[in-house]
Amino acid sequence: MALIMKNKKKIALVAHDNRKKALIDWCKTNVAILSKHDLCGTGTTAKLISEETGLQVLPYKSGPMGGDQQIGAAIVNEDIDFMIFFWDPLTAQPHDPDVKALLRISVLYDIVVAMNESTADFLIKSPVMDKEHERHIIDYYQKIRANNF
Image (cartoon, rainbow, N blue to C red; front, side, top):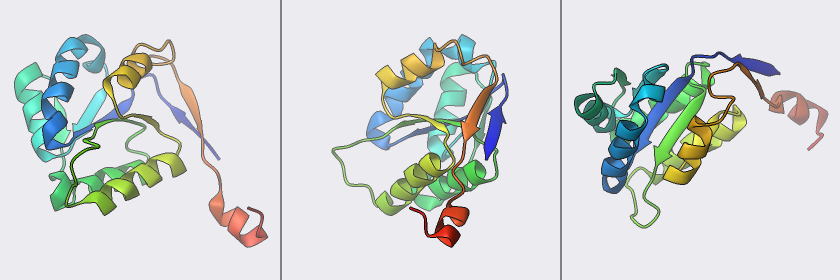
């Protein structure tokens, strides 16, 4: 199945506590580009980005309180097609299973994902950023029924 991402992307902004400042700084640097797109994020991250940059960021709950799962559900419902998630690889998170589920859903639904500043820079400055782009979603139900993995 193919889905078309529009010119105006629906971008989720997520960061663990130790990475929030880095994401906010990155958003400040890229405010002109981000302002052209629809933004959402987990609780505190969304609030801080809005306060620090003036960008409109739709807030979900904080990650540990279900925000990661809300973002995942939005991906499934085709309400997010791009995620920037500055995660902390050195600190155990109480909601690690939720984070893993969010990343799994991101792959299943073929959304664009950046997990560090370098990747986020490459993606947001891509010539595809302001164009339509086709996402390819594998029909796993069909593969399961056909037992064709």
